[in-house]
Structures are given as structure tokens and as C-alpha cells.
Image (cartoon, rainbow, N blue to C red):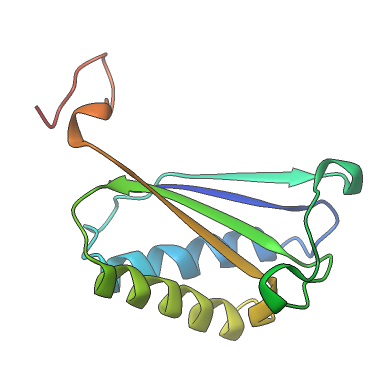
Amino acid sequence: MPLIRISMRRGRPASEPSAIVDGVYRALRETFEVPENDLFALINQHEGDEFVYNANYFGFARSDALVIIQITVNNSRGVTQKKALFAKIAENLRREPGLRPDDIFINLVETARENWSFGAGIAQYV
């Protein structure tokens, strides 16, 4: 059960947010074996002064096309799977919608299974 949060500057092409969600979801399905239809995503578009980043941190050349992707997942995957997820997301988003690799920032947040409620105030995993 991943929860995908995507943050980007406002004013990007209208087709871009859904293409990003699709690319991230396909990567999760392939590398984390996320079930079909297990898709929950939030897309946040920010004005320029609300989207602050360092353009060169860690030696990258980020532009205003930067997309920050944060994915919350159960803490059940190893380093190899995580690296595969990051690589697959970058590959997918380079293809469609054509993002530059330096403009893809990914943060994985892990949580215990008891921290999820999918509705009705019930902790379905425990």
C-alpha cells in the first residue's frame, strides 16, 4: 500500500502530473510487487516561491522542472529493491513525460503496517 505524493511547480504541461503518477505506479508494481489497483496519489502544484530547492545539491543540475516524489510504504523492502525502484522511476519518467534525470528527486518513507487505516477507522493490517 504505497501513498504517493508528487510536488512540482505550477504551470507544467497539463498531461505531466498524470504521466508522472503512471510512471511511479508502474515502477512500484514492477519492483515492489504492488497489487493492481493499489493506487493512491496526491499531486501538489506550487507557485515558485512555495517550491524551494537547491539546484546543485549533491552535484546535480536541477531546473524549475524538478519533481519531488515522496512514497510512503510498509517497511518490508531491502536496499536492492529500493535501488531498483529509484532506477525504474527515473527510467519511466525519462521516457514519459520526458523529465531530465537531474529533475527527479525521490524520497521513500517507511512505516510499520499498524500505521495504516484504509477506511472506517480500522487498522486493516493488524
